[in-house]
Figure 1 (spheres, rainbow, N blue to C red):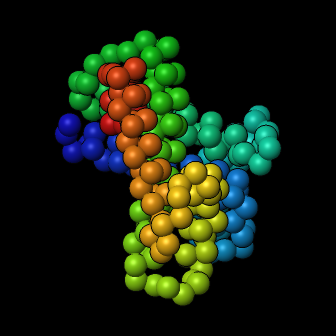
Figure 2 (figure 1 turned 180 degrees about the horizontal axis):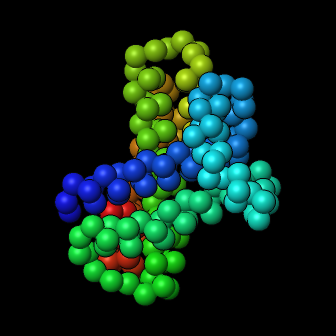
Length: 186
């Protein structure tokens, strides 16, 4: 991968991550007037606004942001091919790469929210604004796992279980889709 391909891949991955966070913030009902929520909306509004005219919000899920993430995933591979030879793919494969790219971005978002939440819990025991947002985002994911795990006192093993499941899903998707999963995670 040359430096231009690296920049394109990184820019698309970061923006897809931001789009997924916008969807997650809306689903988790994070305060819209929070500065982080406002930053996400401002960063994604130019792309999401035109798409929202064609795609409705369904049960609190911003499908326009998901569609934008899908489109970025579809365009990523051909854009990388413009600046170096990676290999060709059919239109169907590009669509599959787009769907897998959305799934990969969701997995990354979950992983990084849990990681940042765990790191902040080590250093800051106060109820800060950042910790409250991370709690709002991670609690719907962690709550069902906490119910299944035995109570271990002060140590919460549910984030480790989620990370293990994410790792397992990554391996399963790699086994099923092989090169397409690699292209989506590229």
